[in-house]
Image (cartoon, rainbow, N blue to C red; front, side, top):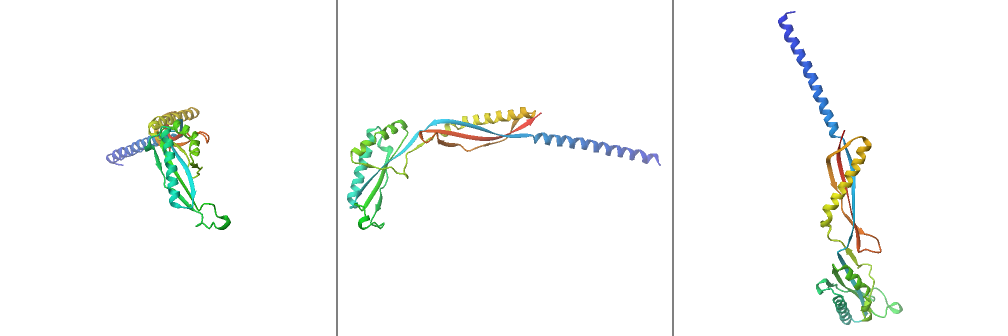
Length: 238
């Protein structure tokens, strides 16, 4: 074979082999990096706080009965004034109370006639709604609400209008609770890493869960439990 042809062919072959070897090395390095990047753990972090409600909504519900609608309306308005005066005497300003329109029930139109017909044709139910941040003061007023009965106001227990306690300052504690939940997630990730012979790296992804606010228990709704759960993914290294 002509030496002038053999030398270039050999050089070409060596170049191809070197290229394949280098390509294989780089491919292997890339796969190694991909596998390393795919090593992560998903954990959840939890944070909880007990807080006091900062807003109470107290509907003072009362009713009156009668056969004359005009007279019934006057009675409802008179009772509403008594409730408003009572709330003012307990230290609540006028602007914290509002009067709801009365709900009238006509027993005759509902088919109550003859011996089944109530003594009064109409029943009117209304409420004065207190909305205040004075929680302790409102609870004391509830305990003294029997004074209204002495003044002729027929208080009723309504299952539709119940006293509710709210916590409205969530934004103030949100950052701290998220930080607490993230630290809790980090502790869980570190425990997993120790058990698996790895180490925890940077955060790969994080999702903040929804905040929930619930009564501490059914006997003290003025105290709330605030909870949040975060889901965090951490990279794992050797």
